[in-house]
Length: 575
Image 1 (tube, helix red, strand yellow):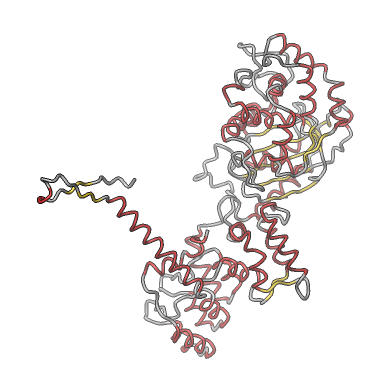
Image 2: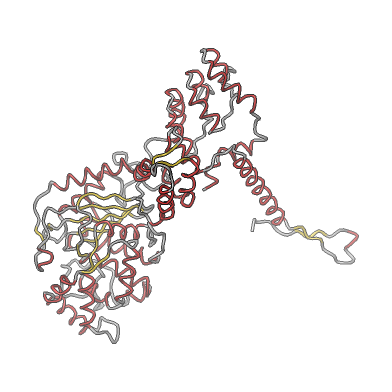
């Protein structure tokens, strides 16, 4: 296991008896590791139980409370929404239910003290702590969404395009409708515009049913019936490749064959799971209209049947009925963005944590969306936007930023190639602003923003931010730093700590917070040998002197460096 070999030691007096004494070094190493782990664990546990280290729940309370003894529930919920999480997130169900019941039993029905707050958040403390520590894929979510809103407004001003009118159900939509919804792989949500209006997926369902087919049958079986290449032709052409197969699952011929490989009930279950059980409906009127106006698709179906493109025993007319039904599945921008985020998250729904699709199915689906997903605009879109996407004649564009987020854009007016005019503009502007293009160099493309990183070099700025907060008496900022596991004993080039600065400025609340909540050393010395007590005495801050004297009398240095290090990393060890 550790690369050591068992050594046979044969004492001279036992050679005749051929008795071997074996010393197994891996076992010894394992015991040493176990001892170290148990020592750190029990040291940390005893310190936390003794009140030396605050719990995650306590730190979260101090961060939200900002010095108050009670937290208004709406303040906590507002701060939660600022991270991108929703109160209706399935992962926060226990927390929200406990909060609701707890508020019923409080005296005012509005505020929570520390004990009640801890009771409410303890079931979801890991997720909540990650959110408030900005450990999600988009750390500064509010700043990011403000840019999204600007891109939305810019695209809304566009005119032109034609609403699809080959069936009445599509023609009825107003050309002014415009919506963008996104969901990150951590479940952060943002919506703007007409995001709750239901619309049919149409061709946006093609990559989803292909993913289901690969998930159920595997890549080799599915592609024994369908190719993988862009066709270079219109999506509804009666044309097959040199092997008499449809070129890919994103053209009508390939999508019809793909439909023959899956089952009705299975697809609906998959779509609902991909959407995190958010809205997935069905428009029977659209289905009837699609079937009545589907002569070309019937022609493609008979051509496929004549070329023996279907699995043996397939009822072609039933397959076409199912094909029209899948095109008529309704979603909203919000639910479709979760579907896209499931693809971005490797097949795991970000708001439920359920695995819906296999990694193989997701990889293949994104590859085909990238090369074939935007009708005759696929090459241009891959060149300029560089992200997997699928459009539909209802005006939707399902966009995936792998390992980051899924986005659904919807606006009915279409360009001459059948893509949403506003949706194309939004996607183009998105990659011009952020380095989401597959081939943007994350290290050297300085002109673009990377929302996956916090602004600036945090290691360089942390000392400045910490000491400036102590200088200005900003206890709220210090609470945020403590929650984010910042070392509250960091020193500047003169070896001065935040406690030195706060004592020199006479900020009693800051001094008390650093000593009580953060348990910092009350007697650190700077490069001239001065302690915070010396600073307070020099500048005549008698209240600070009193506080420091109290803590100096009760302070005992850590037993060793290992113990100090474990205390500094306490929050990370909890996670």
